[in-house]
Amino acid sequence: MKGMILAAGLGTRLHPLTDFRAKAAVPFLNRPLIHYAWELLAGAGLQEIMINSHHLPHSIEAAVQDLGTEGQKTPSILFSHETERLGTAGAIGKVRDFLAGDTFVVCSGKIYFEQELDQAIGFHQETESLVTLVLVPYSDEYSYNPVFLDDQNNITGFGPTETGTHPDQPHVFTGVHILDPKILDFIPAGPSETVNDLYPRFIQEGYRVQGFVSKAYWCECSTPQRYLMRSLEVLQNRGLDNLIEGEASPLCQGVVAPRSVQIDGSSVVKDSVLWDDVKVGPNSSISGVIVTNGVTLGPETHLENAIVTPLPEKTEPLQAAQRVGDSLIWPL
Image 1 (cartoon, helix red, strand yellow):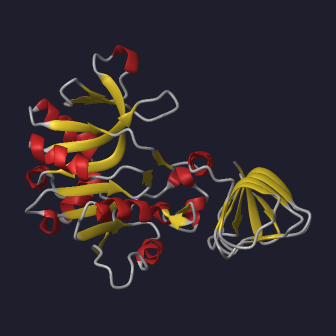
Image 2: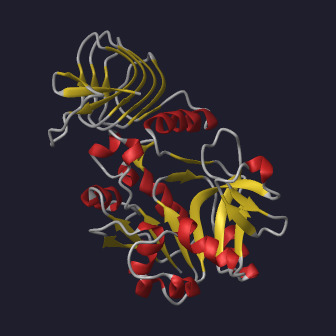
Image 3: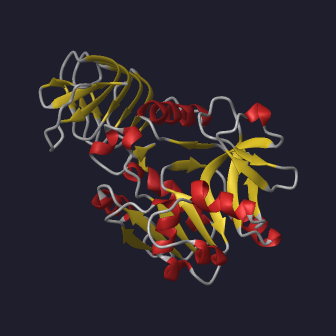
């Protein structure tokens, strides 16, 4: 069985984090987001995985180059670069020859999901569906358009219908599709979407489009606010005070930081995510902050609810950001 990870998004809503790397390459819990999609597919026994790319494609390639363990059989990775963004269906159609011949799995590269896919794949095969979407129960905390499911697990519609006025139960699509290869016959050349174009047509024409409902923890990180909130939420779910791999102050609480980060022992860091090679100087206090690669926060830096990035290579109007030395401070 083969799979595909969708990683060609521009990440516009995740700006300014995506000024420096593609959305799927943004670190979540000290690992690129795309690692979690790869592990989902690898855990289900898939043998080959295609990854599409568009925005900052080299960051995607760098993020996956070390996946797998030496000597252990792991899915091979191929790349499909899109000079023009093709959308979810168009991306699948572009590599139809690769995916043809057997059931395949398509996964968003921007999700963190604690569900194993074996049961969902088995459900898809038993029901002989054309499309199975992996869903989670709807909650008012989600701002996503709902997916409506009847009591026979048939998907009957997609948002933005008000949840209280639809006869069927609302759910949230996780970004995991399990697809019969016959779907490839319906995808035209060029850009098109699955949820907006293809799947509503299938429902209207009577094809079996079903939902597999998972109770496992799931999140996606499409905005900086959501990215920080979900990082801290997973820490709490795991019962961890911090996820710090390197040198850190004993005054840290709710901090995610990789091995290359240095936090002076006199500094207080709370509810923050730090990327590679960040340094926090003495007598500093930061709270609710995302600090991206290579930023040095000097002595007595005091920040709250902000994003700190290096200066971008391209000089563009930066009305929302304040320049401080070689860094930009953005509101969060």
